[in-house]
Length: 445
Image 1 (cartoon, rainbow, N blue to C red):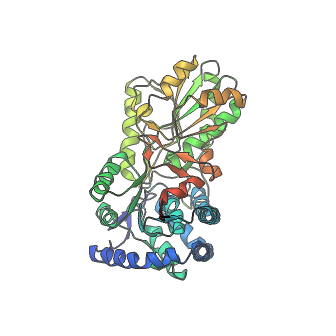
Image 2 (cartoon, helix red, strand yellow):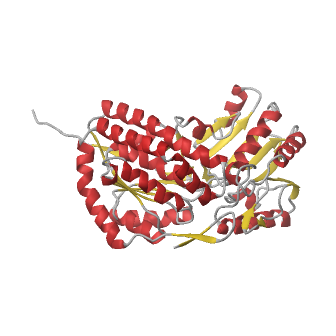
Image 3 (cartoon, rainbow, N blue to C red):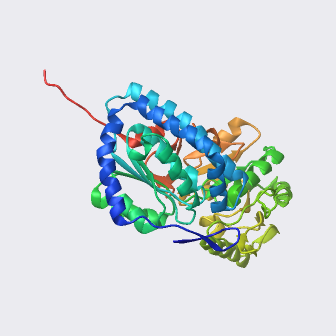
């Protein structure tokens, strides 16, 4: 398989897709090994995963470099690697506490994790770590769009004693993902709704559970009492991190009409401060659009918005090709209406469409009109005022006066509503219970 470099457009990397026979062999081996892995106890599993953490730290530079090549961005890559390493300690604590209180719960024997390209390592490990610590064996297939880090991560697995007996990460296409899903007792999938429907159909044939995190169209709400400087900074950060290629990215912005003009001006000023990542990947904040097909979505959403009357405050009218890579400037749109694609469908780019509102009921109707309901944020002068609005927003997680607190805090529970996913908590301690099932043993008197 040939892989495109998101910065240059060149197909400069190749990998060999895993054969169906190799997948079958691995699944058979894992079925046997998983029993011993679970029976070894949570303390042993924690010890093995902690040894893996030490290996990850020793190979952090190589892993970060491969991820940076996969995604074309810099500071987000360092943060992503650090987040995964830090989350190991947190999941070890959660696993220990869980099994101290729930010894009668047992894992689904084999978990298959299918993850996307926007945060390749983090979204591969978000489900892998709790599944492993629950006592499951885990088969992982990241996106074929960003496979460079897979070889490095596999090296770390081989260097952690015993881990390779119950954890395998392999690069591959949707066909490989389908084979891995066929070997699973539980499937974790992060990606598009269309792909999720295919995974759900496959799972239904085996009558096994699925855990999905899918699309999003997160709104940011700015009330008239908000600290506009703080709100604008948080919104720009929340809309442009990873060039907007983030499920928790703000993709709709609703601002009280009394502060609309001032907030739009602040958004534009702060957006204009951000620069594309340079050729050495040392300076700049905005990396390339990782997947070239996403460029078509971003461009079509912008074209639709302009055709329906939206005006460009600052940013791009379409993605720019620079030295073979595609980039989109942080873009603020005014004169936006609810019927535009940029307000209805997931854009996955650094686009900030802004709509004014006057009445709270009007606001809530617009915010809750989306078929997606992953996250949201409310900016207000007091917690009480913000909470009154947040409680009426249909979303799994609502941040107050900040962007994506569920991801930042890590221990904050977060669940997907509507088309944004199924399967309970995605982030937080309660997530652990998704990977186990309760076994009851009844004694007659």
